[in-house]
Structure formats: C-alpha cells, structure tokens
View 1 (cartoon, rainbow, N blue to C red):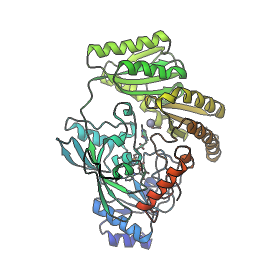
View 2 (view 1 turned 180 degrees about the vertical axis):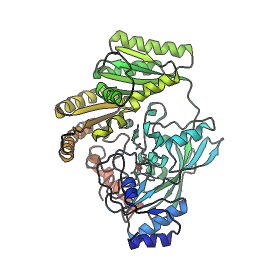
View 3 (view 1 turned 30 degrees about the vertical axis):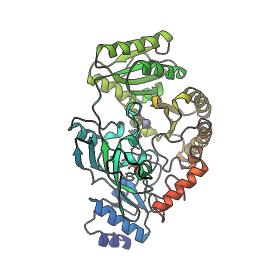
View 4 (view 1 turned 135 degrees about the horizontal axis):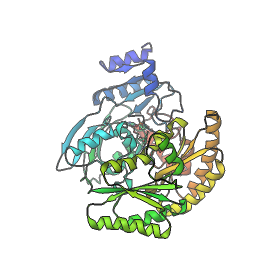
Length: 462
Ligand code: FAD
Ligand code: MLT
Ligand code: ZN
C-alpha cells in the first residue's frame, strides 16, 4: 500500500479493511458491462456505518473520488472504477437488522443480497416482491441506487414502491435518516425518493427499511408461442383482462436459441418467432378457467400458435429459466444493451418503428429481443460477432442508439427503463430528460456533493 493517501485513510479509520491487491482491483473495479478497464486506487470494505462515515470524511478532506459498490451486476457501468477512484464496497454490510410485524417492514444493511432479503422476509411469512435473475448476487443497496425493476413490476411496481426508509451517508460523512419507516410524511422534499435511482452520485446507502407484503396466492406459469411481433400486445390485453397477472415477459427465437445452447430444454417441438412467459394467480377453478379462456381466445384470433402450462413448481422453474437465462446465455458475446421503455399504450406503434429501425440498422448482427413487455420495457441486445473489433462494434451500435433515442424522444419514452444511465447511456440522457431537468439534477448533485466526489462521470458530466 504505497500511496500515502491510503496510510492517512487507515489513520482516520483504524481497522478498516482495505486492499490494493491487483486481483481485487480488477474484481471490484468493474461490473457486468466489462467495457472499461478497471483501475481503482484501492478497495475499502467497511463493516459499519461509522466506518463508511470515516471513509467519506477522509475522501472529502483529500478530494478522492469514491465509487459505491454493491454486487456489481449493474448493466450500465455505474459501479465501474476506471480512474483511480476508491471503491467503497458494501459487501461486508450484509445483515438483516430488524423486523417489525406491525409495520410489516424489514430493516437491512445495504450490502445484503436480494435473494437473502427474499429469504429473510419469508421467515416472517411475508415477501419482498422485487425480483429478477441477478437476485443471488445483486445487493439491495444497488437495487435502490438503480430503482431496479425486474419480472414482477407488472404486479408490484419498481423498487421505489417498497422503500419505507433509508440511512444514507453524504459526501462529507454526515448520516441522514430518511423517512424513518413512515407511511405518511408530508414534511417537504422527500430525499428518500431522490436517493432512489441516484446511482451512487448523491450518497452512500448504508441501511434500508423495506416494506413487505403477503405472499401471492398459488400461481401458474404459461409459455405461449406467438407468431408475430405485432400481436404481442393483443395477447397481453387478452390475458390482463381475464387474469391477475404476476408477470408478462417476452423473448424471441434468437434469445431462445442462445438459452438452449446454454443447456435449457426446448419447450416445443417447433420453433416459433416469439414467446411469452406469463405467471398469474391460479388458486381456484374460476381462475384456471379464466386462464384457459384467455389462451383459447388468443388461439382463435391466431395471436398464439402453441402453449404449455406448468403442472408443478419444477416445470414452472423450467419455463422461467427460458426467460431468465437470456442475460447469462448471451454474455459471452459482449452484448450492446438497450433497455428502453414507453407507455404501454404507445407500445404497438413504438415497437413497429423500433423493429423497422433495428432491422435496417443491423442486418449483419445477431439481435436478441426480450423484456418486460407488460411494463412497456424492451431489452434489445446486439451481440458482437467474434470477428468484429470491440471499437468498431461499439461505434456502429452507438450510431444506431442515436437514432433509437430520437424515436424514443418522439414517444416520450426512456433511454433507461431499469438499468440506470451510468456510463453506458449518459450521452443519451437528453433524449429522455429536458435541459431544464438536467440543469436541476446538476444543482441537486452540487447541493449533496459540492466537490463532485461521489461516482464522478456517472449519469452526467458536471
Ligand atoms: P452495482 O452494480 O454494484 O451498482 C449499481 C449502481 O448502484 C452503481 O451506480 C453503484 O455506484 C450504485 N450503488 C451500489 N450500491 C450502492 C449503495 N449502497 N449506495 C449508493 N449507491 C450504490 N436490473 C433490473 O432492473 N431488472 C432486471 O430484470 C435485471 N436483471 C438482471 C439479470 C442479470 C443476470 C444481471 C447480471 C443483471 C440484471 N439487472 C437487472 C441489472 C442489475 O442487477 C441491477 O441494476 C441491480 O439493481 C444492481 O445491483 P448491484 O448491487 O449489483 O449494484
Ligand atoms: C432482464 O430483464 O433479464 C435484465 O434486465 C437483464 C438484461 O437486460 O440483460
Ligand atoms: Zn430487465
């Protein structure tokens, strides 16, 4: 540990776990984007709120940039440290702290994995309903900092809906206790909501009080084969009208091919252009009849060409794997990821324009479509051919994203539905947020972090 600044950090925060091992710098300096070369100053692994405060006081005194870091499953480069920043990993702060049966809240440290939060809630007969495939590795702090969505937004909303309180350490080391678990609180600006989706640029979330709810009734999972892109939203309407949906997700034949190549089992004998995985309440005969009615109505219209319904939990998991396995299955192709959203009512027209644009723009690339179509959220992943150089591929993708951002702006959509802006989408922030909004965001950033030390270069440049 040769950098003299680190000796002073250890003086200010005796006993702090700090590493500069090359393997650690590499490991903690990047996230799932794998686009930037990690080059952090060091990795701090505090074990308490007081240590986080001491680190930030030190960083503020010595003008050292800090990257808050959770599970680094982020897909927008938000947790990347490529310019000598101190990575502040919440990994060791991963415990449940308190459960309140009357409030139905669970207070946890920010480094707790999402899946561990699920399990802790279940121990009390309740659920924390935000869920997605990275559940085993992402942290609740990272989920809050990105306002993570996932596969159950259609039923339960985004992370934002489930946060009753936050403890946050500011850039100068102060501890803020935001909202303190209250349901009603009209006492001025809600900094808790401001911290949600702030991507580590306003403060370090150290604890969260999460709202819990009752487990859902018994459910069934259905996989539908859909003959064309144009009818996906009709299928959605037919199912939503008749059933209490817990999820409504889609993917293409190309996505399925990659998941099958990664070891999953083919669901149908024939290949179909599009697939939907939907989960819905199915606790009684009336609900099961409604599911069959939805399916038959779609078959009659020609909107669905085949279907399979889960007969056991194991089958339900198998069907889910076809959708949830996509990210991992395509990861080796260093995909260029688009994560866009529009209002559900605008989806049919938006999808038609986007499909035309993408079809023309990428005749030579493998493009994998999937996503949370019931929330108006599409993931469009462009896979890099092995023979194409990284820089050339990136350049072509960025040119197309400029056009996609223009389409989105016409639809009042968002360039980042759920992954965050980070480094990956910061050049396109102005397609979604007005100049006045961005100016206000920068003013807020300045108020919280006047020296610009928290996650600099993410979201926007100052
Ligand atoms: P990190 O990647 O570590 O950090 C993300 C951002 O949050 C960074 O800007 C970081 O600085 C900041 N941050 C982290 N912790 C804190 C903290 N304690 N205080 C302040 N800032 C902090 N996302 C979805 O929304 N929906 C999905 O369906 C989904 N599916 C995924 C599936 C897979 C297989 C993978 C790999 C990723 C998926 N993601 C999804 C993206 C990712 O998992 C989420 O963005 C997640 O919320 C990131 O959590 P993390 O702990 O890994 O955060
Ligand atoms: C998903 O919905 O599976 C995630 O957002 C991950 C991804 O986009 O790859
Ligand atoms: Zn997603």
